[in-house]
Amino acid sequence: MRKLLIIILIIFLPLYFLLKSVDINTFNRNFYLNFYERYNVVEVTGKRIDELDQITRNLYSYIKGESVDEVLKPFFNEREIKHLEDVKVLFMYGFSLKKLSFALSLFGIIIFFIYKDVVKFGQGIFYGTFIWWGLILLLLLSTMDFNKYFTCFHLIFFDNDLWLLDSDTDLLIQMLPEEFFISIFRRIVLLFMVILAIIQLTGYILMKKGKDKSGRVIDF
Image (cartoon, rainbow, N blue to C red; front, side):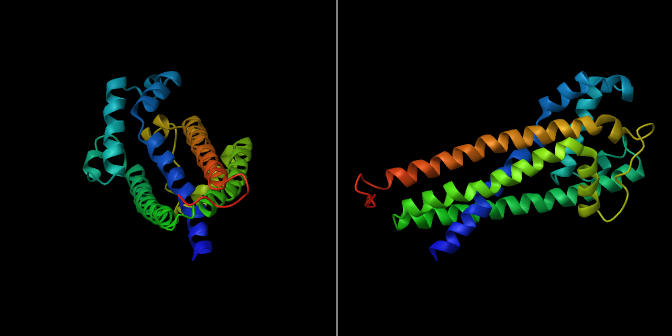
């Protein structure tokens, strides 16, 4: 039972925070507005910053499932909207997985503390997070050829070529070019690294404080 709970925590506790980092950065309005100004999106799209802001809000609303595609039709063509439908489905799965990860992680933490087995809990999350550091290394290496892995991502998660948009005519790619995805990817990974370090430090503290100087487990 303990081994199973540790495996659950190793997988789902960091996964929850990874998905949370995706949410925080994906729906960060200030990040979008700063990006639009920094990369001259106003000039590229021919739209004012307040128009871009409203379009971004509409995208948020649609992807979160708070509105239908009617909010997109004034700005995007049929191909773009169909691709955004696919993106929305992907986010819906992500939202569900985040909730599941949170529930399983909370369950595992509660069980460990009910049985006062904080040493095992600490060991599990301390050593288990090294697996995630390895994943982060692979993610960072992918930025060396971002276009290649960005293409692979779309080929894996989408069963059509609707994501191949024309930067000369399609507003979506004009607003969110490759530089946007590189920037947001780095922000997601950086925040996740900070959270992962905190998780690992917490595990180390619990692992050490759960024992007295003779090595015996302290009963909390």
